[in-house]
Length: 260
Ligand SMILES: Cc1cc2nc3c(=O)[nH]c(=O)nc-3n(C[C@H](O)[C@H](O)[C@H](O)COP(=O)(O)OP(=O)(O)OC[C@H]3O[C@@H](n4cnc5c(N)ncnc54)[C@H](O)[C@@H]3O)c2cc1C
Image 1: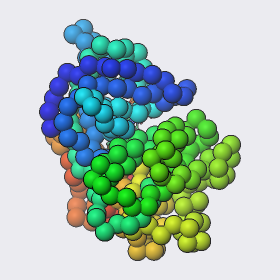
Image 2 (image 1 turned 90 degrees about the vertical axis):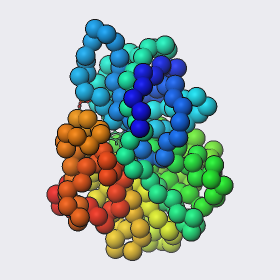
Image 3 (image 1 turned 120 degrees about the vertical axis):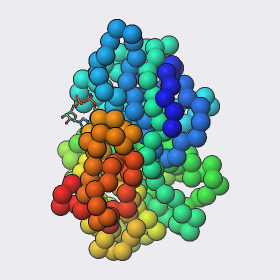
């Protein structure tokens, strides 16, 4: 983990609320790890607290962050320009596992929850592993379907659901995933998931019923990101754990879902 002032390489909108931010960065990052980030200037402390963001892509000399504008901090981020500086602390936390024996992996994501998985796929390929990969990605409508073509180009079988039915299956992505499991269309050795709490809970249940190992990345508001403020604790079967340090990725069976 290091704390750096990183320079913005680019910052561009790819849909009304999704943006890609390229930042200078050197070093190893495991898929699913994250950074605490905040635009930097001497005269502005707005937002006061750094915000957590995963890594969408790693490239020579930099990282790319896929972010969705939801509030003040992310709105301020949209104003970042090439050459601006951001405080970057990380990489933090424990990311997704990948085990050599896994022959088929299903990824289930919702909305901006797709963010950690492109890097995961880059990483799996760089390790020289070629398991069958399927992505089940859902959103409210077309606006939440960012990056899909890149997954297809990377050889991932992509399945889409939109709640409004504007593309793919009409309804929840967890329902489409369950249907495909029941039909035997996918037989994953493991499931990796990131997205809204309700979706994660449902995916965890689907996997539990079938005995499929499932790993979820939890999205909690974080004050510090380095284990001090305890603002992000969740109840697990082993007691309270910090999402920023012991997570953000947990084995789904470890989580006490009723209390999340
Ligand atoms: C480990 C981790 C990785 C993340 N990776 C990404 C990523 O790659 N891309 C991305 O766009 N976002 C990611 N997030 C979520 C991101 O941190 C929040 O969207 C961001 O902090 C919101 O800041 P804001 O100032 O714009 O919103 P605020 O003004 O702080 O809040 C606006 C609204 O969003 C809600 N909110 C704020 N933070 C969160 C949160 N963490 N989870 C759920 N609701 C929240 C608030 O309750 C409020 O309703 C990640 C979160 C975690 C914990």
